Amino acid sequence: MHPKIEKYIQYKTNDQVKAEDILQDVFLTAVQKKDELMCHSCPEGWFYQTAFNIYRNAVRKNIIIQENETEFTENFIIEFDANNYSTDVAENILFVLSEKNRELLEMQFYEGWSLKEIAAEKNVSYESLRKYNYRLLKKIGKKFSEN
Image (cartoon, rainbow, N blue to C red; front, side, top):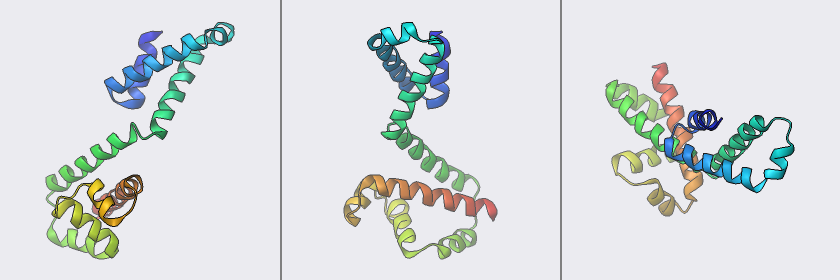
């Protein structure tokens, strides 16, 4: 059963190290709740549900999402460069963005500021800016795919 659960967690996290951490937490929880586990009608199901719950808690704590968003941003830049979008297309998309969005993109991509630096400069929380940036890049990616 151990390899099945590990494979399940790896599938959810897409990261070997995080999967091992979550698996360790699953078995730690199993030891702590051994009486409940022994009386459970489906112990294998208990392990899968516990693995999912621990994974979900990690997502809620932004342990996993943050790295996925960073990877998304990097992939966005690579795809943009690989497709050689014309300057006209880029300018048209930037033109329809709000001043706030254009300023964020300029600071991040043209001036090389990190999101933490931008958040400090704008006096907003890093987490809210990170999520805002992620949604903005998804929106822009959608616009590029339409053109």
